[in-house]
Length: 130
Image 1 (cartoon, one colour):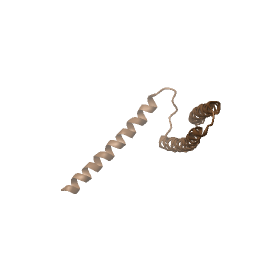
Image 2: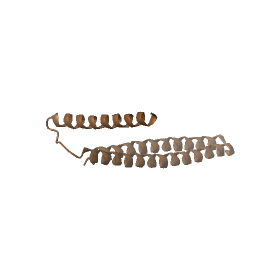
Image 3: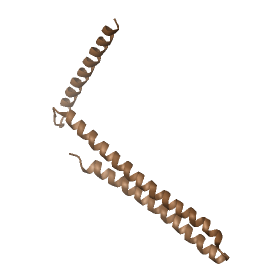
Image 4: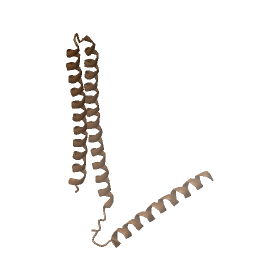
């Protein structure tokens, strides 16, 4: 009895999927100006593959960017601890300004790299439509 239920459910699911595919094909054919493409599944697979490659590239670049950001942050923390070795107030002021500039320079570089990565991803996605 359980096998019959599973088999009926499988057949119902298969029939529903086939019906949806047929409806989709008919709806696509009704749109004016849209070229009918019988192998839309192949195009969907290409888009999925392209999307996966783009996401993988973005994750890889984001990982590299994050690692560089952490290295710069650790270097700045090290410099902050070295500020305690300043002998005069003028030396402390100079080291503080240098650290401040370095921190903001690193922040600017990270922001620019993120914007560049986003623009690159958008160009890849929007510019390379096949």
